[in-house]
Image 1 (tube, rainbow, N blue to C red):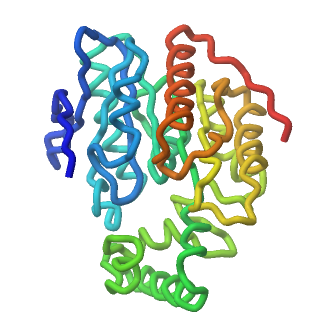
Image 2: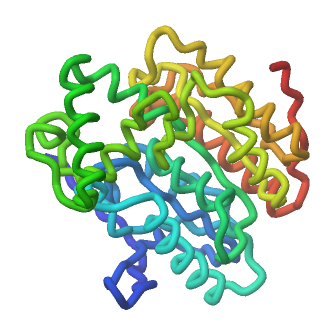
Length: 313
């Protein structure tokens, strides 16, 4: 097995529960801005395939930081995106204190996209960030429906809803519900947040589903736009977490429209990332295109020239 050293600095940004962030370092660089990366479910430091290449290729005025949250690795099963956002706010505040006046951009992969969008659109007092990147913003609800047999899916929804009604929302569901398939045990509350049963689909994690009416996207993307946060969507063209019936380009266009209609500043590279898998495992042109779009967005934020991409939805 090959190993790779990753030089950097480990920061403790939170004393309770003693959370840390790893800042990748490069020789001769003294960045004044920070890109903070939030991975998806079951992920942690250096587990997303493109982390090392993106940190090495990153715009020289930005430092690349991976944040560990209480939900990292298998912790997501008993956490929530609201808790994630509280911890992210502490991390953002920490790096703002290290680099006063610098730009802060959040980048999420997969479920990390929910964290980023919730941070920039939900109510609450937290440090302001300059931009957000959503890489692989897929619907966990639709992904779960793909993975689970319909009978099991309904049974687990009913079980979780029953537990919540009994006041057991923070208790762990039986192992069979999530451990063999999703890789972690899960509380009733978190199951309902991700699975988001109908007809209301009120799960807190349910942000990117293809069956949403425009008002649902306006309630997140629209609010983020009105707060002045620049945004870029990087939807993987070959993402197998998305049902084959979903028109990815049309879905992205609807998200972008909700953002632009509210006056949002959309990155010029926003859209489909052709040939990319969910976590952009591909090397070569696909990975280089990810690097290019991220760096263009970061440079535009630094220069305050993020423009309004035209949307045809």
